[in-house]
Length: 228
Ligand code: ADP
Ligand code: ADP
Image (tube, rainbow, N blue to C red; front, side, top):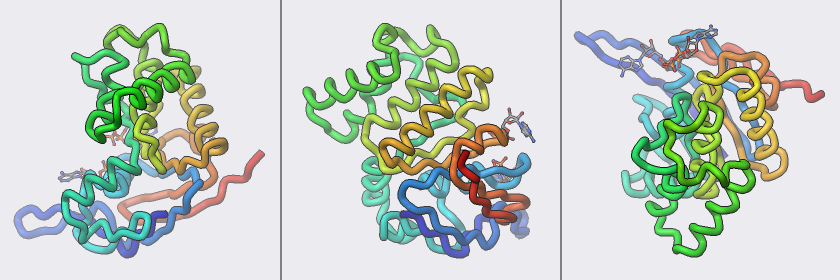
């Protein structure tokens, strides 16, 4: 599903290149659940943002579902993103002025999904995530865990092939964090949605099937998680 070849990312200042990622070559198959781990500043978020087409590598090739993302026209890239990628953020990034319902609906409006289909998908997500009673509330009226459920519901609304999550439980207490990880596991196992998360938590990483350890912009280890 994803093929990265020799990805590099650097920032230039005063003629000096500061490398964030170097020689990153890896493959992610449909149905995998990958955790990207490593120290702060290692390049984890940058790698996830490249996978999510939010940042461009300075060198190397990135193929997503057989398309070479690095040479795609902007419009095609946005289309690929909207049809296949659901991004989940540590700080939720919900729109404060919109209700829970409207936040989940937003990506469906972008994709011009018809009214009846929108309503049925949103009702289904509200129901599955047990947040029907919250649908007319605003994000600041919810707990962090509930806001993240809305963030995930929004990511799922467009029926993505892959969820990319940057420290999805970084702002949550452990009970809420476990609920989110259980949900990811379920989406992965039962619906075959590919998941790639950045996490500092060994415990969170154990929910997945594979750990990519990165340090100083380089992949140090690629470990298969033993299933229990
Ligand atoms: P960013 O989201 O900007 O990439 P970091 O990855 O540096 O931020 O850190 C994300 C969160 O994880 C922060 O709340 C930070 O305090 C915490 N954190 C950073 N490094 C570690 C670590 N080694 N172990 C546990 N928590 C960490
Ligand atoms: P991590 O998620 O592992 O904490 P990041 O991918 O956020 O790491 O950042 C890796 C390195 O890239 C850091 O040293 C950071 O300061 C640097 N970096 C990230 N974005 C920029 C930018 N826009 N300009 C310059 N340096 C950046």
